[in-house]
Structures are given as structure tokens and as C-alpha cells.
Image 1 (tube, rainbow, N blue to C red):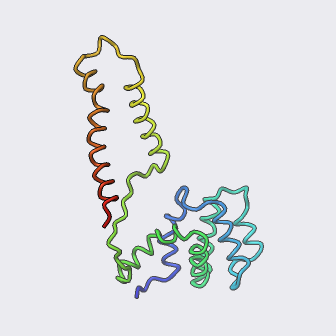
Image 2 (cartoon, rainbow, N blue to C red; image 1 turned 60 degrees about the vertical axis):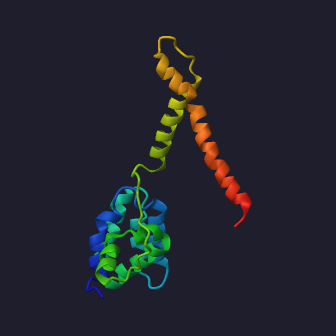
Image 3 (cartoon, one colour; image 1 turned 45 degrees about the vertical axis):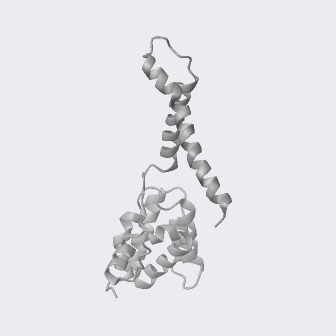
Length: 183
């Protein structure tokens, strides 16, 4: 078991938690409300209003909340982690302190499956690449042929759907034959 306290973990996780886009305003508000309304009450009404002030930037409010909790003590930090687990479980599982604890304790079960992140650009990066590929395909197949284009290139592009279709149909027929044949 690690000697790291919840306050130490919060110090380690603060840069991660205050990173751009990690916690939404709704998640921060839910965490603050839980720390204010549920037993044990960690934040007073006045403190909760200060940390939920919409006039202040979200990152500033979050930094102020985390530093307040670090100064308040171990129990308050522990309750913050409980609220974070309830309202932002995917983020909770990615915390740097959790990875450090799992590596030091050896309690993490290895599922044998590696997580691969292909891109940090998210779905918009994928859609941009897909639209470029579709646009190029439409350009190649829908534009009228130019007689000045090399005849060999036009011939290869003209027959590529036939070649692709022949290979794909062979695999599809094999798949269907196995499926219809039974076990």
C-alpha cells in the first residue's frame, strides 16, 4: 500500500485536472454541489457560491477549489475524489496519481488488451481525413476524362473498380459459403 495521502494525490493531479477541456462546467458544478450539500459537508454555502461564480473563468475557479481543498485537509481531499469518481468516472480513471498507485501496488489486473490512441484530434480529425478521401474519389470518378492525361494512368484508374470488385467478390463468396454451409 502506498504512503501517498489524498492531499499528495491532489497536488499531483492538479495540473492534469486543470488542463484545457478535462472537466466541463457542469461536472465542476456537480462536484461543488456534492461537496456542499451531502454529508460530510466540505464546503459552506458561501464557499460553494464563490467556486460556482459564472463570472470567473472555469480554470480559475477549479484552481481555487483544488487549492482550498489541499489546505482543508485529508478528509476534504478524499471527498473530492469521491465526487470526481461519481461525476467524471472516465477522467477519474485517467488520473496520474491512479496510474502511479496501480503501478506501485501491482493491484491493476492486466486485461491483455492494449489501448491505442490513433489521434488526439478526435472525431473531427477523422471526419476531415474521410472527407478528403471521399473528395478525391469523387474527383477521380466524376470528372470528365481529359485527353491530355497520360493514357496509361487513365486506363489503370478506369479498370481499378473492376479489379477491386473481382477480389472483394471472391472473399464475400467465400464468407457466404462458409456461413451457409453451417458449423
